[in-house]
Length: 211
Image (tube, rainbow, N blue to C red):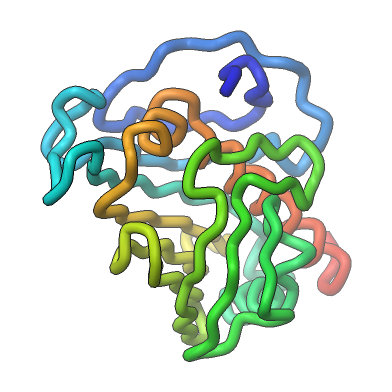
């Protein structure tokens, strides 16, 4: 996977470790100019070689979190934004989401992270198809992986800070193979995906509530 495909406008705060600097190309979506508060690292270490090993050869663990300002609370509440998120997976996920037209508590979805759904998405090179169980609350959607790396989770949560609604994406993975970890950790493929997602969510919120 070529790290030069990353886009500008996705500034992050200091995380647990530093990653190599790569050449970026011009940003095309103004909504992606939001600054992200982020944390990214391997459990127990800051580089691939020092990540915690799990039970089998070639398996690793990682954690990351990104937070993006979506809108002002004067336009929409955190519950409003999450409702839009839950009702529009096809419109806001950068990769293909199948078997669920909406996110419903107790449902299951098939994620095809290697297949582009929105422009500028850089696909994850391994484990590109996976089935997840969905749990929802008025403020969150959580995916729990059922097949590859079972028990791993990705949570999408809305919250309020300083009069603004934020979307936070948090992943905890146990059993990721080295190729997926390298893509997520070194080449920022996860950040690329969630940057595109938050920009699409901003556009959906603006369409309904203005801004």
